Amino acid sequence: MAVAITNHKAKENHIEMLRKKHKDLSKKIEKDQQDLSCSDIYIRDLKSKKLRIKEEIEGIVDAA
Image (cartoon, rainbow, N blue to C red):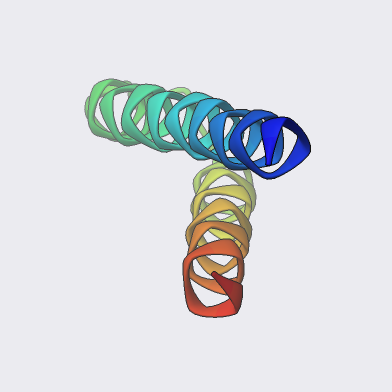
């Protein structure tokens, strides 16, 4: 039982960390899109990273 609780808590912590990364990337993308020196490729790379994080979160939640 203690292992299941610990495992559940570890998943929650991991999901929370991923959500924070996702939110931070959202803010960075918004900021960098205003910066004319940032290339479209750079912005696209950030958006891809954000999408991968979202998919990882969904995968963990769906597996639970």
